[in-house]
Image (cartoon, rainbow, N blue to C red):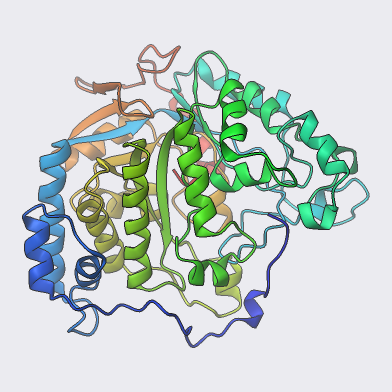
Length: 468
């Protein structure tokens, strides 16, 4: 969206917010836990009791927490068994240029710095469609199955050439548009980028609801029309990022320039309506409270009903606070606690009774805690992530390439079965035998390791992971 931020982090209170939704309920922890154990559909009040370990106690009750984690782990075993899945994927983020002004983000670089007459130094980048194609093509023979692409909202990005013509005649301040010739590098159109990254039957996972909004701004086009054209250009599925917290009173604080909750949901439903697969996320541990987290889960569960099961996985993303405006201006002093992370995973599993897969993000949690989440209700362990920039630029410490050998070793160490999967989980391959291991499901995969051992060390230096 246009840079419509109503405030900066420096304007926000550091002693709490006057929210309508607070973690209160008329339910008891014991009743909520019994419902969870019995597989009954939970209410928001149930979810609040579970994620707080009871509103009748202060802080997290450790013994109650363990009961919630146990219930979630049993539910995981009943729904998906003991397999832990992962995907051979590459992240290709097209640009860091963005004017949206989200206060939790340090991935972006102010788009003005990218203009050809700017003297502002920055470490950002923009890739042309040809460069994106080269990135993907160079890794296809390595065996990747999926390309994930989540990018900043570059003012020169348009859906197609017809969109450029509409935007040239628009109020540029209103539409956050400047023509490509104003910039050092032309990102091309969204259609051109989709065509460029859709190489050799690779699965293209891209175009979040926020990016879809950007691809229709200034027009009367529907989300269905936008996603239909992107699908024709090669898009296969949509990452449900830009969700953050699907409660507007929280969005007003952390991302007032982003689309509202209803529009995020509308875009996701439209993507499913044209036949695209979906994932869904939550980004928690900043200024929201437990009631907001559960209300977010409730909206995702309702959406899954409307899209007839198109959401393949739910991805809890713990807020990485370092180097973000919220932290730098003292609005937050950290992210979620270990207890909160574990309960977020567990209650996601218990509440989302119509979403089979819950992901543990080793980029957000690290290896040790990422493995712990696999015993709290999660069953997926992300992907190999050959490149990424989002989490690392926010101060994350774990954004590195993950090899198949590492996956197999870690998953077997906790007594679970490592399984290579496709993006939609329809293709699955148990990884057995002895190392070295490599992907076999990608369009050109033959079991060869993605990178040689010396390359893997270098890949960790620049690697990061998109919110999927």
